[in-house]
Image (cartoon, rainbow, N blue to C red; front, side):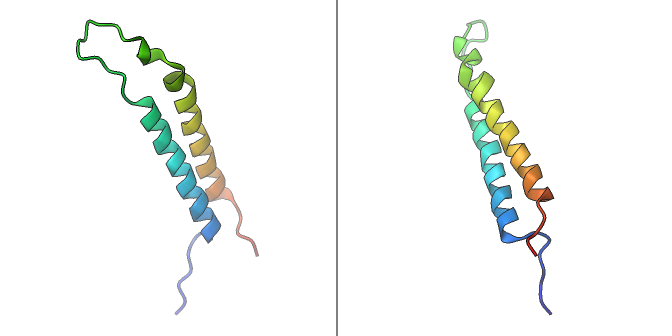
Amino acid sequence: MKTTFLFERGNYILMLAGLALIVLGFILMSGGGSEDPNAYNPELFSARRIVVAPFFIVVGFALEVWAIMRKPKS
């Protein structure tokens, strides 16, 4: 009995790449806290957290959708 997978190898590679982008985006977004809750930390609103990290997350989710919707080559 031959085992068949739902997706092809290329789809799984694209899914892993999308997952890596999502994880990278969340890693870029983390940190920047302050020991003192009354102290202002301007790093909280850096371009990395406001622009770059959400861009990686959105691109990662778009890649996930594309990897799932991509038709197998016949």
